[in-house]
Image (cartoon, rainbow, N blue to C red; front, side, top):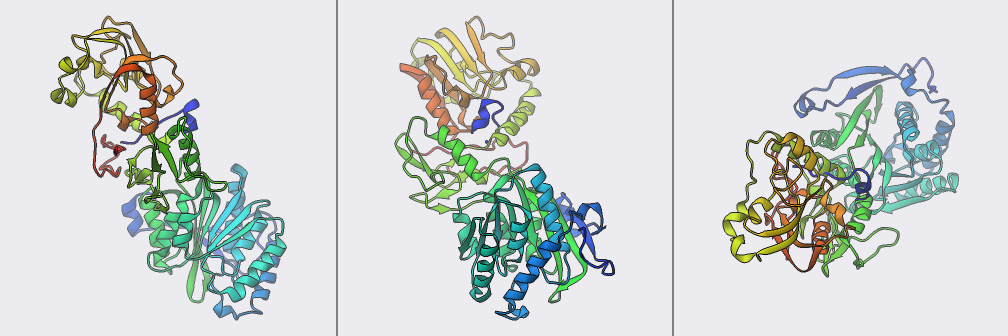
Length: 518
């Protein structure tokens, strides 16, 4: 089951072508089919003429002149055959035009603050990006194994774009990208093309992508099967949308057909946004232990215990292993220390919709109440429970069974879907707006929004509530603050030793269940 949250306040937690007309180059346009089975076996192709409006954005001769200058400089250091990369071969411009068009279209809708690229090489694509959008910063991840011409290219680019922030992170991208704490609006992937490196790069870059992002992948053709396999993995796992493949007919480089993919990572939250939102929720009135420069910490403190943020693990939260989420997986929110402690706003909302379907058609008037079988509430609870609040009442409430034969002054039912249950669940226990004859208050808001609720209660009831909220530790903080001194906290949860948040189907209700340690 997915989790969901927040509307109003809850949204805190998240060529003109310069080619001669005699060339008549064409681009094959392929839209990757969204259905995985067809994706593996068949790709439908159409043809787009590069002179169509889809590819016209004024004269790009200035960009090409810059690339010619850079190319000539590089070739004074090494012969063409020793240069890796080559988004620009000096023979055709379809890919450059395609990238420029995609970037300009994207920039009409969203700001571009940082462009990130795996594979700097000769700096051709970096030049295109820096020339196309004014003011953005540029970050490249590159092994820097060809420093003879890479150093030359970098010096040339820094001189050309002296007012830009240009950063080169040297090393294996599969190791450096997971440690990166920035966020990228435009992502270009042109790293190693063999083995599982393309798939690792595409997954790792998803972590640092902005919610609104543009994804560009070079050499996305059958000439590079590991690259196309990585793209198909993204599509099959519902990690991208609008992913399209462009193949330049009649254009090859060193015997390999040229092609590229353009799309977007599917994200409703970013790592940085999630961290910043979680700081407010996890650390209620508690300081954090660590801070790293301009970026937030990898950990937080709850009840004097340090916990790792999602995707971070290890004794000091120093190791980052990011696994993306999909429709049926919440693993991006999981860490090996505490399981799933919080999920995004979007997940929580989707879960509520699934929960609605689960209750709307059930012909019953009582919850499962498995805890009733193992706990004798009549014996262990005081006779007078005073003012009671139940967190996560559902359509039938747990108090219906727990409070039997007890004295209760008033009851508050906290249930974000309360009015839906009243209107759509036939046997909803508080369908009339009251809990039997008791003075009743119904709070139809998420439990996590009670942080500033000033009323205190003699008894707090919370049965299997943590799995239904978007922030587990925040809810525990709230439950404690709602309780009067010497009050009674009736709490029951289902616990899993190794629950990783993987559902069998979109309707699986046992989804997003956080484990609790210590």
